Image (cartoon, rainbow, N blue to C red; front, side, top):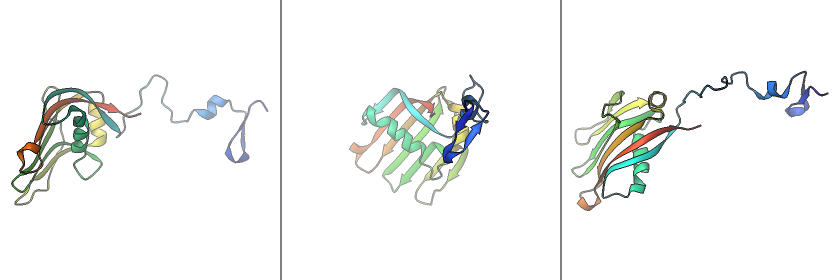
Length: 162
């Protein structure tokens, strides 16, 4: 009975050690980091410039703008949105050295309003930029009221969940 391991439902595995049962067949060898999936988060590294916005709000604004494209399989790295003559949102995410992030263009603009996106697949984004620092630049004018405008430039690190 020493080599019998109980399993849910009253069954048991005979002749197996506990290590053989607990380690799944598809487990990665020891010392190999897990392959990054599509899940990531951001960490604020530095606020380079902030105008008319609290530093505590910046990270959440960047997260929301990176999720601006309606399809959750993509990460938005450039977003330009205008609505009427006053409402403007401009967002760009660059590598730390200032180079552009590769991706593809989606333009859902009309004759009067601009809704343009530059996106990259989330899995590709995580594979390329996990652990790296990126620079986010944002300008938002939510209405014709100039006192509600804000802008910032911040450095963020891509942190892989898990």
